[in-house]
Length: 92
Image (tube, rainbow, N blue to C red; front, side, top):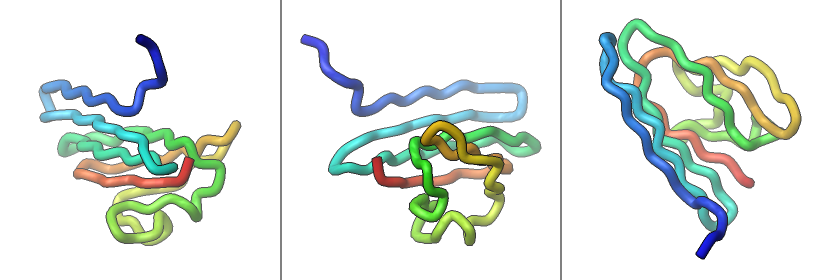
C-alpha cells in the first residue's frame, strides 16, 4: 500500500471544448500530454528548473509554437500555452 503517484489523467468538457491533462513519470522523466480548447490559453507548470531541458514534441521548448515561457520559480517552469495539443517532457 502507498507509494508515490506515477501518473494521472483528467478531462473536462467545457463550453469551448475538451481540456486534457495526462502526465506520467518514469526513467527519470516527466511527460505531460495536454489539450487546450480553441480560443483558450492555459498555464502549464513543469517540474524543471532549467527551461532549456524541456522539450515539446521533438523540439526544444524555445522552438515550440504556441508556447511562451513565463518564469522559473522554486524548481518549476511556468509556461503559457495557446489552444492546441502539446507533449511536454523534462528530466526530474
